[in-house]
Image 1 (tube, rainbow, N blue to C red):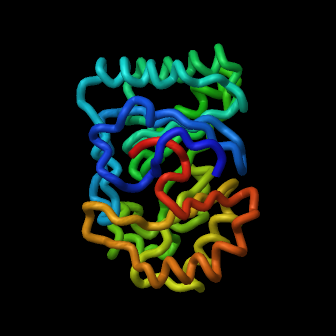
Image 2: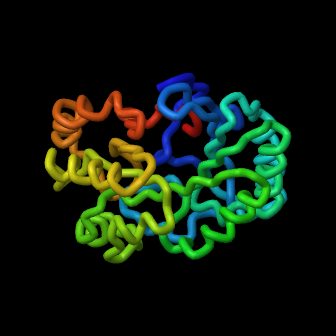
Length: 253
């Protein structure tokens, strides 16, 4: 999936010691953009039973800012689009880092930014978007819903979203991440989630579950069903990113 500088993905290896050269990459296919993995003060939810992504954090804001500034210095503005991920939500980044992102957009002529956010911080999104909109920059917000089956999402995954529906989620968020390859999923449930994502959101990112330190493990039978019966339907869809491997976005370890 485009140029990959260093293996990564958004889910799920232990990331407390991410090398500097694994914090920047480019995505060349489907919505080309640069991507940076910054460091914040950590996810405030930290209860998801499948995710240990949140281990890449520090409570030392000055150290975070110094690291993040060096990472942002690698941004070229080549595509006019930049995705910013961190081990949690945009609001876990320090204010100096936010200002550095804004400055980077000015100097590199970036007009579209992508951030991530947990449902618990949804009421902060509008003001955050306005801050950048006032500078002529569009912010697209992404959320990891994992599935639109609220019972499965909350009783099994513990996402902290209650019974939020796609309609409700779409009031705050532009894009969604789905997690597939889990015990209990089927061809029908995976297709339903992707189709709902496409109906209500600009883009869908499908992540295949990988082994990590958390109790929920991949179901390799479900993954084979995905590869055989779901993947071919969406692999060429420009609105759908599919990460079959946890290295496909080119940042992290």
